[in-house]
Amino acid sequence: MLTSVDPDLIRVLGDPLRLRIVTLLARETLCTTHLVEETGAKQTNLSNHMKVLREAGVVETEPCGRFTYYKLKPEVLAGLSEQFAALADSARTASENKRACP
Amino acid sequence: MLTSVDPDLIRVLGDPLRLRIVTLLARETLCTTHLVEETGAKQTNLSNHMKVLREAGVVETEPCGRFTYYKLKPEVLAGLSEQFAALADSARTASENKRACP
DNA sequence: CGCTGGTATCAGCGAGCGATGATGTGAAAG
DNA sequence: CTTTCACATCATCGCTCGCTGATACCAGCG
Image (cartoon, rainbow over the protein chains, first blue to last red):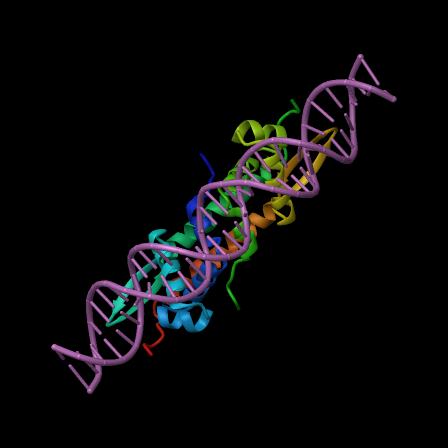
């Protein structure tokens, strides 16, 4: 088993603003206007980040009139959680697997 | 409660090479020489990344003669796992908390 | 001591990416 | 239909950050 974490997914969440968006969306389903209010970022900037989050499969869009609501996909976060848990688990036994000095 | 994840920590793990290092260290405790062999990166490059990981509290150093072994701190990964689990949990109920269109 | 090998630090370069402004699209309101 | 508003796309700028090379440091070994 190859305990690993998807690099692209973490890279996407590595941006502070995107992580903030994800944190906000974890509480409420919001549209771009709300996110502009909450984060203080410009609409264009947010739209770019939302595109990244969408393509990474982190969020889903739900059109509502002329508004676009964004909701998180909990499975993705749960998957990340499991992957990190597996890494942590593996790391606990790694202290003994010390490769010999060359 | 403010379900959030440490942005700096994720940012550190957002780099592909650093994530690769963490994945490798999750199986074995290695020194820089080993990491150079495994990743193919230059020693200088790796040393820089190890410094970042060290300052982020992800790894610990353990000198062994003129070698320096790196080991993961499982608590950090476990903490990340919990934080993502909390986010996922919160996200599951967020679908209903839809803020009204302005 | 001088030499060798493992590792850390520093300065500089360059690509990648986040932020911004202008513009396009599409749907409701009038 | 025209206007307005929410949102997306595109091109561009600027800066961060990862990579590299030179160099310093430290620990063993002869």
